[in-house]
Amino acid sequence: MTHSTRLTELEIASRHYMASYVLFNQAVADHVGMHPTDVQCLNLITAEPEPVTTGAIAEMTGLTSGSATRLVDRLVKAGYVERVRDTDDRRKVLVRVVPEALAGYGAMWARLGAGWRELLEENTPEEKQVLLRHMRRTVELSRRQIEQLREA
Image 1 (cartoon, rainbow, N blue to C red):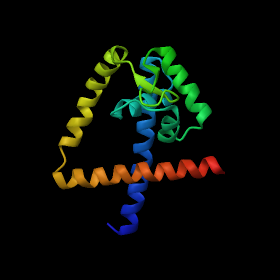
Image 2 (cartoon, one colour; image 1 turned 90 degrees about the vertical axis):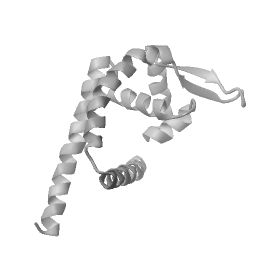
Image 3 (cartoon, helix red, strand yellow; image 1 turned 90 degrees about the horizontal axis):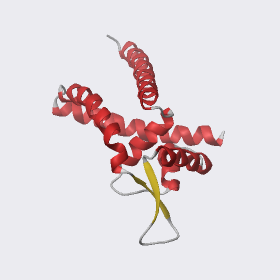
């Protein structure tokens, strides 16, 4: 197979991969009664070791500060997060996950995540390293492209 043919195959597979994840995210959002962006924001917030500001959420998601505020409002209303004052800087408001509210949500992800984990475990350590590098580079490329789209 030629380099050009392999690249075309990768481009097509990438389109299918991204579409499948968007559709998967929509199915998860429909299942839990949330907006798909809210699901991914909650995913990002729960991946952080500490509570985050709404500004940090805007940076993580590529949303404007106003859109990030409305998103947090929806998550607060749904009971998944709460706004709390930063104990080190009382002027700062943090968005903190409500662990009790995430119990059912977490159980759903545990069920779904098992399949993803099995899929990843099939790879050799070298393949996992390539996948990790690809994922990190994809996240960075997406951030840059989001910025370009926002500026256009």
